[in-house]
Length: 348
Image (cartoon, rainbow, N blue to C red; front, side):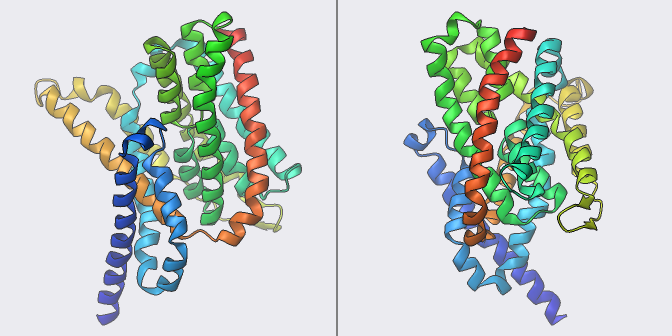
């Protein structure tokens, strides 16, 4: 009985500790100059968490349960609720070209990155997949989902998140500059929107770059980005099979079915039809406000997860694999920049 009380207390202590980091992350993220840089609370949370990782390790016995809960359970809950950012109507409105380009980008970047990450950069398979998945799909959210699916060590997810955040921010500022200089001569607003949505890392990056072009490019870019987000589901189902056999260790790994991926897809479908399903039963304004609240809870859960992952980071291991991971991310960044342009010119 006493041990059970101590366990619950440790859980609460850990969650409260992470909660303080989350509060600080939200505060800093809402400062005007941070907003202008489009730096998300997710990134700030992982940075603060990493800085406080020595504190966590010293008090691990009393904090670990709550930190692990935040990094695992709240992560999956946040990924499920992320489905409220996507509707099937938005995806169908962009047409087949946007879908095919998104599919090629996701399959191509993930496959190429996973291969060269191991063969040419000397990364382990898990880190290569996390960096490639973050570049191919939706940045930090994809890394978090994949990390939970393949059960990798926390520092690998942090390394991967660092790469997609840096190159995502770089792309967000670079694309509008390239458009102003010469891309406007080769791409229409719609084509530029597809290009941005199909190749930028984070949803926030897509919003920032799209808004810098015009409203039409922005709406198209966000829709194409949502197609890539949807493609996270089949990838989450495929990756555990790829990880079943660990070639480096020469042993079988237990197969983990990411059931939260099915729940994510269910939420996408629900979000697509919720207004028609509840028509005449619940006011549209109430539904909209409820969805807004769920989106906020989603963001909060993911910030909790990122902050908790930051606390678990091993700075020594991070330093050992960080350079190679950033090298892989740079190659994938160039592949997205050049390959995405070619795909848009070919298909649109």
